Length: 376
Ligand SMILES: *Cc1c(COP(=O)(O)O)cnc(C)c1O
Image 1: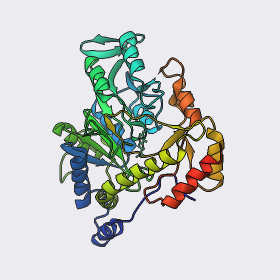
Image 2: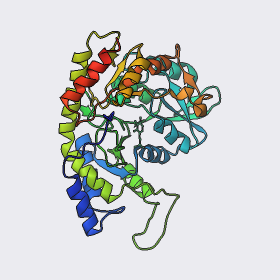
Image 3: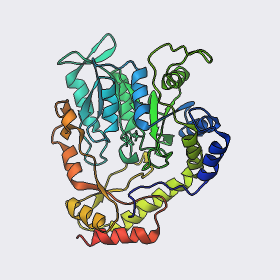
């Protein structure tokens, strides 16, 4: 099976992991955790980085630090991976789902602005949903597929309406907006190291921020809120959300190869764009010129979505439909879904992601492209 986006462990992974095992430094503290955090902060251009057990727990801990609870709403796109909305629900809050932009598949900023203008009001310097008075403390944009919306506009709206920005940049390691790295724009940003992401630690995540107090607090909360190095004194309800050293060792080895991986992702999208140009009604997501995306997961849009999916998977080339939009899932069908024509559904019914592991060969890329072409 040709994997959709599998791990590429061709570097120092085995060496560093072996070192952890031989020295016994396998668990929740260790030099690799510190090094992985330092490398990530440097790469993302933030002052601080705090490793977590997953991207989901990274998002959750950010919301916990903002004091989000069941009286709150969090604004987020309707097209995202479930982890975004799950992290919101863990706090008791509800997502407000904004429909997608039909061109770049990110949160539609016209709709966002309209929602904020018409449906919210300011009370005591905080944003509230007019209909029930619940607070909207945070907006959580998602850099869907490593692409980025018009961030200047989004940040401007967030400031105008007193919304804290927490970036779900879990798909956007290696993506830039106006030369600045994803995750470094909001008060906090997040990364994921799940097996299908640009780099992987098997599973893992990261919170990045320029705020020292928040970085310290994130470390504290993810370490069971232990407040004494010797005695088991804990000063609040904490979480066991740490990344273990053996996973961080993999992360360090992966970070060493990240520039090469990003280069390969760019070659892969260039190959597909060239090979599939003018084939049927195939199109790709639009990328603004201010954005330099990581091209994490090349995804095509076509009315023959189901035929192409079947042809590829039948031939052991793993490809996947886009996520089911959040408003169509049982848990969120009663949530606010702000839209005009439900573009999320259109995107969902037309898009599919195609094989793009960084170690895919050019021969396999050609096989995938030929198989897709044969559907038209
Ligand atoms: C991968 C991902 C996450 C985090 O996933 P984990 O598997 O918990 O690391 C969160 N949001 C989005 C949009 C993602 O794609």
